[in-house]
Image 1 (spheres, rainbow, N blue to C red):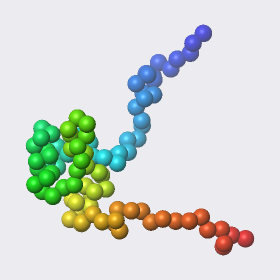
Image 2: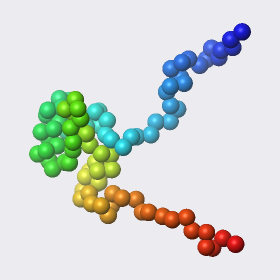
Image 3: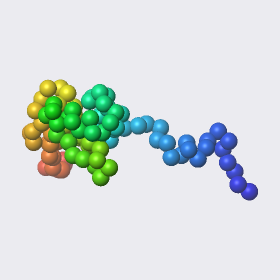
Image 4: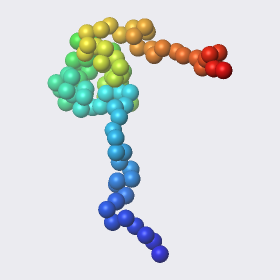
Length: 95
């Protein structure tokens, strides 16, 4: 006998309850920044406005989220402000 929960569907299992932004901007986010829906126009806008980007295999622009946040804040992306601080596990103060 199979017991199922009628309130839960198979799509509920695959859909996360909390959505975290990924490392890359979504197509919608790139469209919102550039003002264009067409990838060729997005690429043109990104290049003419000095945004670093790469092209996917489908020739769509790919922009990193951290880079975009720095760029939108008016900061120049550098290794100093994009790399997180490294840490080590220090047990010297534990008795």
